[in-house]
Image (cartoon, rainbow, N blue to C red; front, side, top):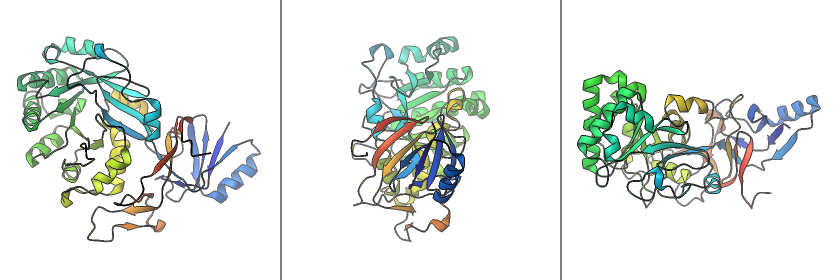
Amino acid sequence: MSTLFVNGTLHSTADPYATAMLVDSGSVTWVGAEDTAASMRARSGADWQVVDLDGALVVPAFVDSLVLPTSPVHHPAHDAGPITTADTAGAAGVFLSVTSGASGARAVHYRAVDADEATGTADDLAALVSADTVAGLSAVVGPGGLDAAAVVQLTSTATAAGIQVYLLPRDPDALAAVISAVRSTAEAQGTAALGMVRHRLSWNGPVEQDAIQTLAENSLSFTAVPDADGALTAPIASLLSNAVPVSFGSGTHAPDPWSAIRASLEHADPDQRISARSGFTAATKAGLRALPMSIGAGFSMAGRIAPSSPATFGIWAADALSVQAPDGRVAAWSTDTRAGTPLLPVLEEGTAAPECLATLVDGTEVYRSPSWT
């Protein structure tokens, strides 16, 4: 049965003014205006289910780009179960969790490696990622994880084998070791080889400009995980301005993508603040684009609301919607829809956090708030 969603605000680049959407067989088949939806329904004569959004906002579902186990070094043999339950993820509007060392519902799993495994041959590494559910390898670098020599060998061997590695430095020295390993691999194998595998790096702290340039030249993506206070300290704006893709993860905390977007708007360094629109991209599409090509192809149409895309979205109650810029010294927000930019919730300090009313994945409801009837 087709479902027609009406009386809402759709975050759709296909139609920034859309207030209605038709979903059929797990896909979005149409987005547009309310009056057009009424005419379509009358002409079709079909028994469409109609959902009144009552002014709610519909946005592409979020991607949690890094869910970490609670122990510093984790091995799949020690799995105690999923890190993120479907209910917890759904309540945060998350449809895909990218996990390091543990897998759960709707998850992309990176196989955690220890020091002995990291120094294996290309065949050894390939055996670790042979399962269909494994996207690549993840490695803690620094205390409790790989030392500088091991991360060099892992990065080099994995690049030659075409295996993506998710590098998780634990301190500034470990970050320096990761950057050094990338440079060593680029010198030995060329930037094109690194561009084919697109390794990943997660870090929330200062990054020198020459290190940012190394990430950009060698096609690494960057995942920022807010700290325990919800703050981002990584140079988000500098990374993006140097063409380093940025996504957001929750780490060991409960997923809260809107909080991460707010943190990017309110970065302690004014020069590192980004717009809500850029933050929203980091919380959605950027996480899909960072996946290995073999895995990411399965999500290539997700992360947007447009005809032919999967009906994978969140329905949110928000006090106010706007187009928000990151700089408080200028007019930072606007409710004028004539700009043609899809609206997002106002995320300024003191405003209530958006509430997830429902999350749908491929047209199937995976979460519904008790408050939404």
